[in-house]
Structures are given as structure tokens and as C-alpha cells.
Image (cartoon, rainbow, N blue to C red; front, side, top):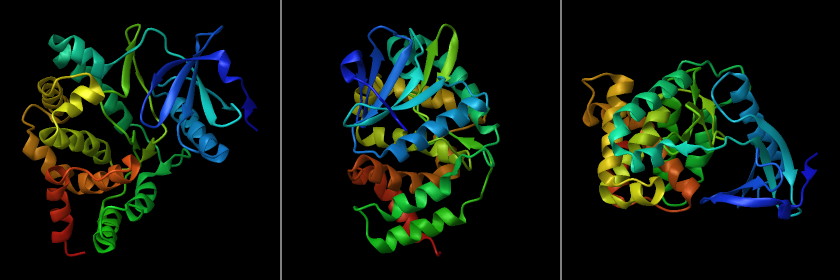
Length: 283
């Protein structure tokens, strides 16, 4: 059962599209994450269980605590990482560090993708995405049915995936790197993670401000980080075109789930190529 708390004992430290973060007035080592949406206690418990599994795997994440209730919303308490800065903000404030940051970021991503997730209690990412695709309200059912068949045809894998991978979800603190926002952690093919980064990069072509508004970077800085990352992760001969060709099936699936999660249709210039790809498939 969730512990009841007084939200007045907490100070807002950050807010995003889906939730608000707080630190405790008398114990700043505690972090509280409250969801903006009407989320059940069961769903919050499930998210905290995921955090505990990831922490137990030895991956660098904040230590999870307990589920709490403030009278209206359920939330999760974590051990707070003090004096932290996201990789995205570091890239924006210290652009000369982008190559080194991309190297460190790629090393953490490789560590995720070399850690076995199947059999640990983590969810199969394909089972998560299937219902999300079918619940997308912006695309015709015929296309969504084909997209679910595409999803089912993708190779199974037993490695961990972050589920919402971007350079805002890795932080530095006291010389160490930590993964955050890990509620979507699952197991599956690593390309599902690369696909979300590729999708963000594609969206930036249509809306360069995406890097400014979401990641505190100019479009040029975001582009440079992406170029450095793909070479660190795949090798020096990697290019945008090669990455997109490799992850296109995963990006097509992921962009449809992005629409469901965000509650808005993606710009036609960004999503039309992947919709055309799905339509072209004989499945």
C-alpha cells in the first residue's frame, strides 16, 4: 500500500510534459516524481518495480524507494542524485565537449545493450508497443494493422533497451553517469533505442526548434552530437543514411507509438516517409 505524504513538505525542482519532480524540504537527498496524468497505484507500482529491476542489474540509475500518495496522485520516491547535469544541457552549455560527451553516452548505451533483460521481470518491448500502435488515433486502422504485423516480424532479442533513449535522459554527477526516466525500460532489439534517437533527428529537419525547446541545444549542436554518437556506437564509417536504413522498420513502429504517447500527430514531412514505407510492405 502506498505511503501517504503531504505534498507541502516537497519543493518543485522540475516539470515536464507528463510529470513533476520534487525534492524534500528537510532531506534534499530524496526525489519525488509525480505523474500529471491520472495513473493508478498499480501502474506506479509497476514503474517502480521496473526501476528496481534496472537498479539490481547494476546499470547506473538512481536508487528506487517507495510508492507514495498525496491525496490525489500517486508517485515514486528515489534517492536523489545531487549536483547533476543532463548530457543535453552539457552539450548546449559546453559545445566543445560534444565529442567527449557523445563517447561517454555511447559507452553507457553499449552497456545497456550488452545487459540481458529477458527473464529479469522486464517487459518485452514488442508486447508494449503492439497495443500502443493500435490505440493511435491519427492513422487509419488498415495501416495500424500492417504496422503491428511489421512489429511482430522484427527479430526478438533478450538485451535491455531504455525505451526512451535521448541525451536528456543521461546525467552527469560527481564524475559519474546515470540513466534517468527509466519507466519504459524493457528488453528487445537495441535498434528500438537507436530508432527513437533517429526519429528525434528526423523531426529536427522539420522543426529545428525541437533541440532548443526540449534539449537546450541549437539544431547544429544536436546534429553534431548525433553524428558523433553514431560513429562512437557503430564505427567511424557510419553515416545518417546507413543508420536510417538499418533502423527504418523500428523507427516506423516507434514514431507511431510516439504519436500515441504525445497525444498529437507528428508533422507530415517527418512521418510521411515511414508511413509510405509501412504501406509498401507486403505483410
